[in-house]
Amino acid sequence: MPNYRVTVDGRTYDVQVPDPLERPVRAIVDGKVYEVHVEAEPVAPSVPSAPVTRVEPVAVAAPAPLSVVAVPPSASGATSEVTAPLPGTIVSISVAEGDAIAFGQELCVLEAMKMNNPIRATQAGQVSKILVGIGQQVQHGESLMVVVEA
Figure (cartoon, one colour):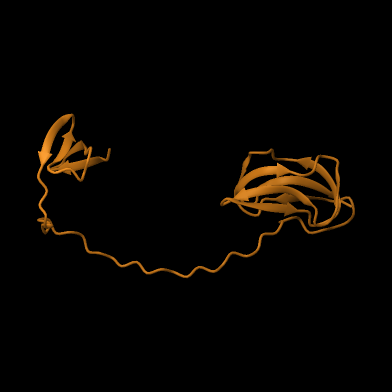
């Protein structure tokens, strides 16, 4: 049943309309039933309406492909963080702490906008710490894992 909030002369009413196509229309205003007769032809409003602003569509460039954001490789044994490339939910984790990983290996999957986005290793190394869990919401740039470079 459609519900409306209507303001008349500064007073607000809660209005329910069980069947808007019924003639006459029954309107329940703050618990009291009224019959409303609707004219077949629209009537011009008695109060001037606000000017209409035309909204033009704007072309939007396609997003860049997803990639893992990590600290650039440095000397052997250095640590880097794997971060979320966009906000979303962690739906799976493919590695465990202590696992050796290879370049390009899937580390976890991040669901964003109903799409699964695999997060892959940007270098070989070992997973030092996993900072997220399955089902966890993450924000863009949030750390997901710490990797010790090989």
